[in-house]
Image (cartoon, rainbow, N blue to C red):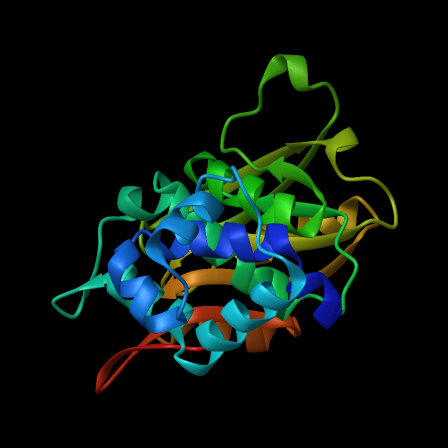
Length: 245
């Protein structure tokens, strides 16, 4: 991702729209040095900032770590992760997550964003939009109208059973580059099945992203799989939650 791309008027407007989940226009005015009325125009997409203004806004967002602060306040309440649906059905938070993933994987070409379960589809769509990629969603149900399927299984410690995942074969093209995304994980055991599906498709798994990890068990899962480029935005540690951006 070039600095020119990140400082584009459209990108900055989208970022401001996401930040509005946590900050009022008055607060953003004080933090960014831009009048609230002007910020309203940007977030409503009726006007877009000029290049120099966009750079000024982005520099202030970085310096004050507003994205990190917004994600922490939105994802964690009283040292507990908010209900998953509050993440998955909040367009502004999904937009901020999409921006962060875009920054993480700017050096990698991503063709397909793969997710599981189906409730994570909205997250996958937003991330895919940022990355200009397609979307594939794995399901525990094998739908008859999907045609030929790619199928893999994993053992869920949480559910105490073997889970089978299915994806339409034509949803992941050969040699495509695949990024797995998920909102909340514990041990991330399902990634082994998703990696197997990508391998069956003769595609390439370039990384995996989770918005929140409830424990450090996912680290062991990633070590066993040997998957590189794994990112967790927020982790729970002895001192509480911290945002890793």
